[in-house]
Length: 363
Picture 1 (tube, rainbow, N blue to C red):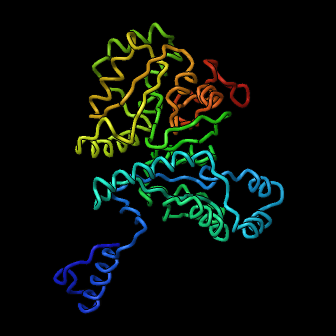
Picture 2 (tube, rainbow, N blue to C red):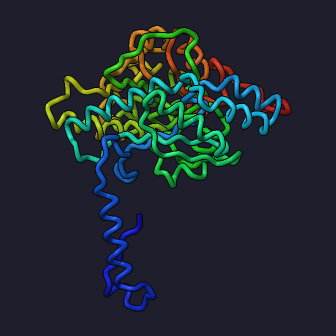
Picture 3 (tube, one colour):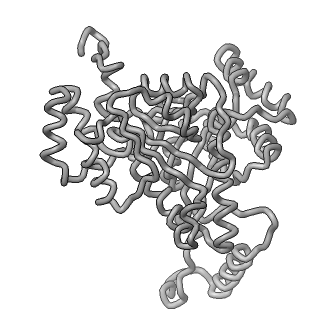
């Protein structure tokens, strides 16, 4: 809500002072309402995670109806089955883990607004909203903010909702969000199911073109590893530019520090991982010094020197793993990791190190 201006600032306004007083009283009453149900935090303090309905819930059957029979049949099906909860989707474990962190934060800071806020961001029609609400209530999820755009792209609303991270199964919408400067990723389900930690949120990040820019990856692709190693040694003390997910790591760090302030570092319900194909001795120092220069910590740093990421991720069991290259995404999900593709940087032009043919024979 907008702030109420003092009477001396609105002398020329047509608003009656009595109405202003009533409005201020109504606002104060609303802000002080008590309820057993946790209220969503104010967006300016929260870490806002926007998820699409198809990532939160498994809507494969419904999507097939939409694609084969059209929007009217799709909406009719959803209305007809609105009392049947949708099955959990690929982002469901991540969302549950966010709620676990919120519960711990509320124990330590009962009046704090610095919490995760989950927004359902979907281009579904409002008629479908009843089934989505019923499904959310069935699983006891705390999701109070919805954005339902009736067939239009919801991307334009992400900034209005002060979004820190957007997760979708639609790669085009994710690309659109990245271009708007919003952290975003396309989610992929795991081929096999791993048991995930239920009392700690675990988030794994690739480095280049995810947390950092793709400036070093460009050198690898264009000039090879030897030139890359020389470059990283020469510029070891120059921080890398930020990548699309740096701000999300920053937001996680802000919440982690609230636990550290209560002497809960060893019992923190948020744990972050850097899982990078870089070699530690040859090119790792610049990465760690960059994080230090940003004032950010990473709980575990795993330098794989080109080895597959899947087996390490299978041990970590993150609720989500972000990477810019699809072959790492594929390797992760084959071994049970929920992965999210970040469509950013020069890596989008390559697959398994080979330049992808562009339309018209261009490379």
